[in-house]
Image (spheres, one colour):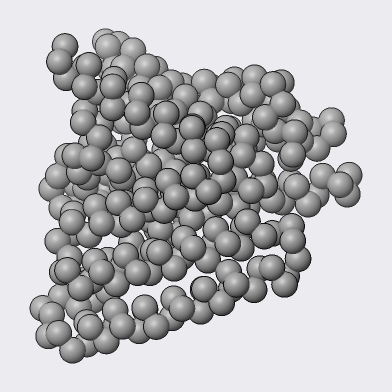
Length: 289
């Protein structure tokens, strides 16, 4: 019971911070995402036991990625002149990469290729996807909120259906038991069903107005849900693979009862870039139809 209370309270705080920052103010949202990205990058490097210098360069790179992406996203509708600062910030990223590479060349590490790979993973599979939330947010904050809500619904639906079907006489069909023993194909289908139903409801509430193409709004919402469910599940499996590779159950202890930051945001890592591209495509195609 004590563990359940701890898990519930930390979950409320987590959801409150995410939802509150999205709804309250863009600057607060940018700050929260920056904090989450830095914590996630640090958590990843702790998992793979990176050196202090490699973690430092990864921190610097993540800060540059977040700052430049947020600045460009903030000024997407203001013309190229106001976006120049964002591109100028992005140029700063090259020296960070060079410093990280030179460090691997000169520090006589016994695993330079592994360290360099870990640096790139922390940048392009953790920091960059989280920074792309800014493009979704400044297109329409309700789309970003829909992403989070549907991720949570997908996880809940998959867990419920997977748990119920596991009690059948022959059990259920596992997706990747060597990586995630509890994930099943039945749970995946259940997550799809819950997520698509919830997405259509959100469409009726007007959450997809920005990208809803006339006569195709329901299909847009259903596609949005499918992408969330599929890539959210793949992101979860990707993080599980990383954890199994280093022999740990949770990525950290940041959220009591829930694990680390990566444990809470793993589903976002693949879903965000895909959903961002999909929503901007719909946004530009809608006026043409």
